[in-house]
Image (cartoon, rainbow, N blue to C red; front, side, top):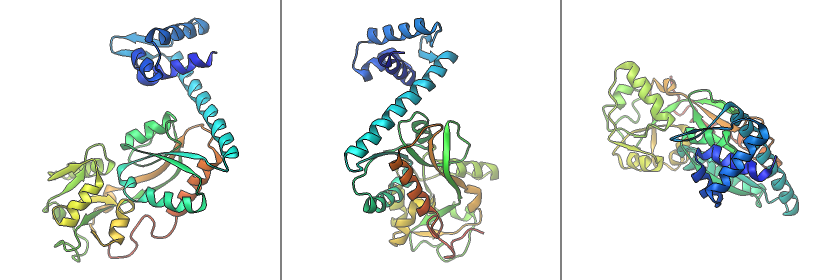
Length: 310
């Protein structure tokens, strides 16, 4: 099969539109349509259902899309490995991560990794949890690091661990030093929380709904740094996994308010790669490094600092 035709086909599959694919490929829409028609004639099968709202893959189209995607990724991998050989190990790692991990954890990990591998390049995309999974499934990133509350298809879980949630507040909040409190105690104070796309919001909403508790945050955000500032200033309490706020805790900007229902707000932290995809040595090395750092004592929980959930 013609590689250009496969590239055009894959772009239509991704965008669901001939015009959108043509725009991204910077060619005429008629050229894209011709290549799709040629592929369908060659294979003797319709690859798309032409609908008023766009192009939808048929079963045959889905099979071809899977093949075309694997072919494109294998080609990219070979190119990257050759470049690493010819450029003194200057490999590229494309990361898809969620908001909470972008504030400090992943930058810290990159900083440490670059001490040993200073020639490595990183491309970081901050996405919603669903966006990370999609980027991994479609090969747009090499590694996804995200929180998950449901099983995901099309990805390989390289590492995962259950992460309880913690309440985060200013260091002089009235509940600091009161021992483990109830969620109902926390909700008597103003709450700031990530929006509905975030897994922490989803598990908190589900818990509150199961208990008939009304959750009425004073602030919702797509940015955890803004919520941490509200907490530091004493305007709100937020909820987070320890790993997302550990630098702010270490720096003394905020503090943990331990609460009894912490594990009811549990999520899995996952390192994901595309199912069936061969990884470059550089990517494999970075995953191994991440796992070794995450397995260190105190990396993902505050230990027994009067903060461990009951």
